[in-house]
Image (cartoon, rainbow, N blue to C red):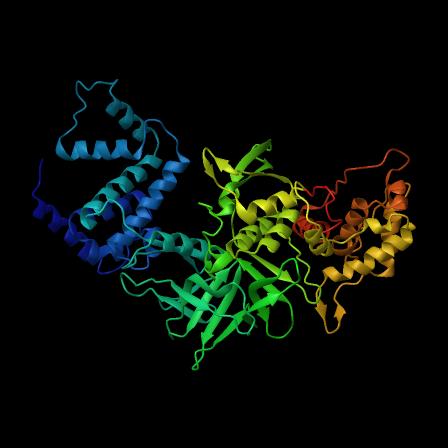
Length: 578
């Protein structure tokens, strides 16, 4: 029998009004989804949505908002499709079936059992999970009709430990990707419909379509030192809604808070520590670099991020087009590296360095200003940073270090008839590859490398003492002294490792195994000290490979220490740190 629309609507309306505002007790997902579908098709959703006992509806920012509901249902369908890989059941096939039965009756008489429709219906009937799936697809089709849109632009943000869907009045794909990434990596909360980070209110989510904006701010050096970088501009910045003069920046898992004072000056805090933008002269090799400097102390921070933009002086040699290059140099360098895939099989992968760029933070310690990095990724980011600010010396030093990591670099000088690498960039690369010689450059860059081969003939104990003295220069300098100084017990323990005739077990907590003993052992292995290598040979031929097995929970720290202490040894020596 066919019933009139208004007659059926009256039946449903009396059903929902009879509940008198109390949520239905039934927790049957199929029953509640059926009622939701009926509410949408008969125009009763806005008034009676709160009656349904559907878990995902309680997580919506606004319960009766059809646009938010459409996004949530689309995500549920996507999750279901990802978990079920049936060839016969796809979203498009179910939509076609629903369209077909909405315009005609399918009678199970003289029905072709070999037809695709019969196979689809049989598959849907065979698994009870598909009851919910069919209803979700039907609900999504109704929502598309109501919202007059197949897709709804939305932001997905994680607050209070769970994801929320926000339908903005002004959508940006770049903002959408950034907000999802940042809210996953940092802890945001929501109080009374206001999204917050710590005590900073960033977005008001109470309107049905809130206005979500990210900003750009300009930071200028706070000292009188001048370089080719005139100012720093940072994008994807949060602005506090309680005031127009407070901004929040996230770079490499660090938070930067910027307060604009009445006189126009800026008060900057990095992780709650006072800092300022500065241009520091590091040494002859690195020269001047724009960075952040702590107000209390001389240590500096180099941030690298695609959200940081530097205005480079466009006059003379610092003009981006001065070298006649059509592309940024970072796009003309590829790397081939070894990695282990999901099947635990080793594979080689070739990538452009420009595709590997991420964010990073490198702290350079006063007074030695050694460039100490924690990973190969930081070196890739710093190489791009050096190219961006047109600092040839910095580029050479980073490239020296990168050559010693577990990747093979290739430089694409030409592409067909187009010259891609030229000018001083080409000369710098040839110099690092030792295909050109410059005694003046050698004198400058040799100072950035620790010459441990000069101790070739020292007795082992004296050699360990010499390396321990140099070891302090890798550490933070506070109140006139270095924070980590190798103790006598650690030196003797290191000597025992090298000279021991047999393996032994040692697991004392706080002994400095990872931060002191292991990096010193690696430096000794990379040296040419006769006494050390005589013991390490263990009566055989000289060893050329050192493998260190580290407990998994210590691996990140161990890798950091090896990179920090073993990339700047012996200028021009050819070795690799994997």
